[in-house]
Length: 362
Image (cartoon, rainbow, N blue to C red):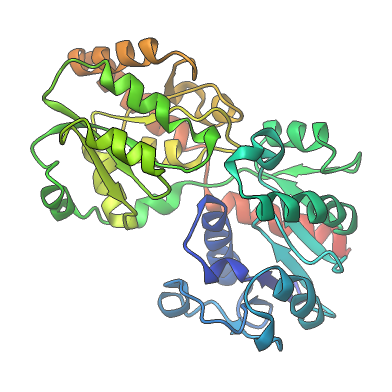
């Protein structure tokens, strides 16, 4: 590929989310494949806070003019299209400059429309105004699952034009060394625990996980909640369990891998997901996954997960107790989980992205 490819690097100026993981891993694969003469990442003038800047010299960083435009929507809509005149742009995190036509945009889901209460007014407004315009202007539209493709069409975020499905990978988790010392630090080294990832959004359904755990009468087991975003009422509720629920806050990738590897099971009761990367990460590191059938989860998790209704805490509690008691289920499910995770590789995702751009250039 001779055409210069630029990546929208706005994601490097904020704490990493799930969609930012997609941009990170695709960026690394594309940088290695295309080389610095063909691939670059454009970042705002604000200091990028990702380790990618230091740890991955294959990235070629460029800071377009616009130091007074910040690192948010204004920079993305004004400075970025000016800096990418004559090149193609990859915007991998739901948003991109509306003025840019030669652009591949990945819109991961329609959750702002499905569960608006999960997001702030300003966030909802920006997405409602800009995403449909962006989808009409960009020459290539991509999403991460057939479920998301259906939902984007249902809410008319995209029109009748083709939307390509390019699933995420999950094998980035293979390269990480678990920080087992962290388990000692948080009191989980010699204790059985269920692992859950926190999320502020209503659709993440964290309250169900807490309610289900309250019905588990084996007091030797804990619920570990990793990640930020818990409300004050949720924090107070967790505190009422007198140490059985451990609210860990944000964790590093290495700490998360340790949590995956040693948990009794990974609990993921989300009401909807555009893809569902955490369950795949957990499967790949040997964790049993218990999840809902929300959104794309059946499509992504396949036979690798145990499914429970996202509105039935009693059934969740029964399933958790069964996993505590029956080792044969755990052994079989671990094998199925890893086999399922093998379907999702970042090399394949990057190859599909390259092919889409090459076909359009021709």
